[in-house]
Amino acid sequence: MGVGEDGEESPFFAPNPVDDGSECNLSEELRDLAQKELREDDATRQHALQQMREWIQKHPDIKRCRTDSAFLLRFLRTKKFSIPLAQEMLERYLVIRQLYPQWFRKLTINDPAVTELLEKGYIVPLPQRDDFGRQVIISCAGRFDPYKYSAVHMVRCHSLVVECLMDEDENQIRGYSYCNDESGLTMGHISLWSLTDIRKILRCIQNSTPMRHKATHFFNVPHYANKVFEFFIGLLNEKLKDRIKLHTSIDDLKEAVNPKILPKEYGGEVPMADMIAQFRKQLESKQDAINALDEMEIVLNPKAKYVADMEDELAGIAGSFRQLQVD
Image 1: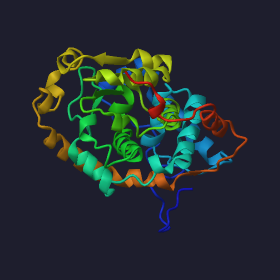
Image 2 (image 1 turned 90 degrees about the horizontal axis):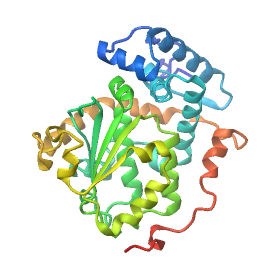
Image 3 (image 1 turned 30 degrees about the vertical axis):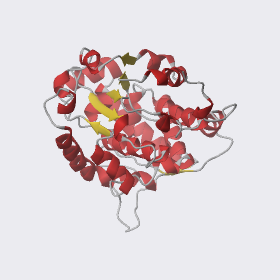
């Protein structure tokens, strides 16, 4: 499993990596937070990583999977070191990458559409964290042209961004906060999505993506999109529903998010263009790890629970957002 095409063992796929989880580079503050919220300590982390690697080696359907600590800790920390739950999420993660390659595979900054969207500032991780230490990601609907780009471009852009961020210890432990500026949202954006695809992507986000979603803020939502947002929120689980906040204005948002960390265009201190340039450098440094994801493979066993769970999502869902009655 660990040997690449050049005959050398890849650091991402080594069955017994040098980094076995025994050494911890976390700050004392992060150690304490991980212990309090995730039940993580040095012994638990090392044991869990060993169990995950042995399980991957023995799994009859997993043909190739990253085994480095940063990757496996995505799942263990998201599931608070419940090894069975982390294993289930890893199975589903591998499955969605193969079921929906148009969304999750061959993610690269060399993709022209994705590069354009990132440079336009459609989605940008902020360089400064919020008051809880969380990674904040801002997206701006008005910077996405629905007549030039597709829903696939939208998802690929988000996927590349989060794959760049998910290996970082602090993000895994503290989680993520999202600020979504919906000014400029039009029916053109909404009509890009079928109800089936909306259901699929939400299932992927909720059940198969190893991220701790701590807060989601929507602001400047057009009145005609209210029913769409009600539909969207209704598909989420209760935990995520409780973490969604709808703000009437940017001023309302600033009461929940420290305005200093926002782009200068939203009342912060750093111009968005500078944030974009900084994130591009971060993306370039992570491209090898992102490329390695495409080497992973799981056999889609129709009798396996992890495949059946993904297929169930399609039942009874049809049509598109054009069928919604919008005020």
